[in-house]
Length: 137
Image (cartoon, rainbow, N blue to C red; front, side):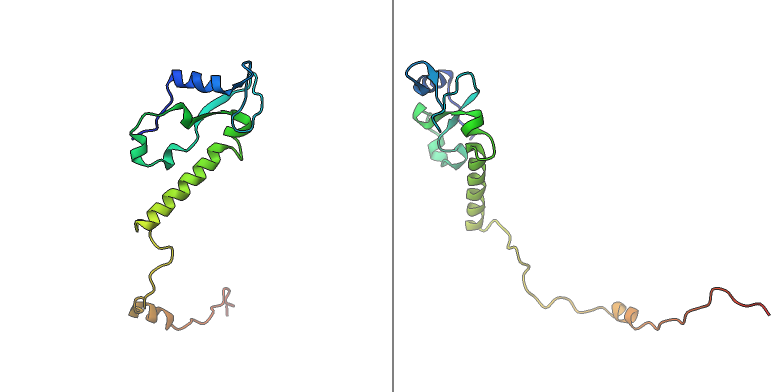
């Protein structure tokens, strides 16, 4: 199933909810007045972490929040980065619990016996050094 998106009506309701005092839009993450700054409407719980049964029902405005792009949503410590780390960790844990992840260490074993060719190569005698220039008689 794909990501559920908010309808335009739901987006308007979330923006209205984020207007404190009826005039200015505030970031619902940190409370900063956004004014003309950019904002995005995001899911409170990342869609990647929701169970499939939860994704079958319609989304409500209670599941969304208005976040400023610079202050809370994007950036180094923004919600998107945290969500991506959390979803990746969840996927790793699921794969490990289901046995889908290969072990990091090789399986210990005796290995293969050395071939006769490699033993012959090592036993080859060293040649004596030749002189580059020979004196003519």
